[in-house]
Image (cartoon, rainbow, N blue to C red):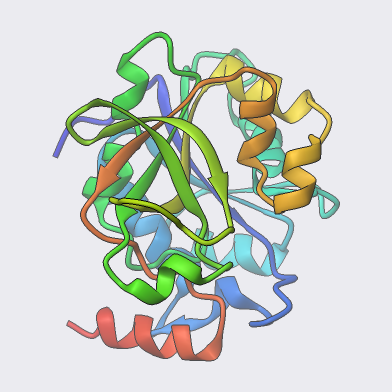
Length: 246
């Protein structure tokens, strides 16, 4: 495991108002709230302090009970990136942090190595934001609008320069890539991003990352081996319990 870096921070946005799985961050997985499992994955990555950003005192209490750190943020944020930016300014008013990794609070099975992988494209100073994708192996995903497809040009083995992200059907010769909504930002890029108005493409596709591309920001993608389970439904929660049973 790499040593934690004082200039890197992992922020985990968690809100209680999920429509499909109410109270999602506190869903029990083997005696531990889901958000605490995600916090542990963040710590296992070993790249920087992991902190939960939430609008719920119950989530804050659960995280602190488990020995973690949680920051209260506004209940009115439109997105996770807005929430993590508020948390960043609260925990680092001196602006010592240079890199922020945004790990969604509903990824209890995310591999620590994949969290680390999200940082690697930022070694290139031309890259503003980095994210993850995996090769689509299930043909059903090619036409599933809930699967966001990442498109780009290969920069080096295992890394793409993103051209676009879409919910549309994947067409043409592969490989096709399943986007994973975990992001690493340079601080200046995150600050710029949250101050930009939503773009036309973003609103059409309901994909926040298109705002960055539409405003000339560069996103590169680290290719990882598999897509982590995102917990959105009771069925997903059952799967997560099985995967974490060991």
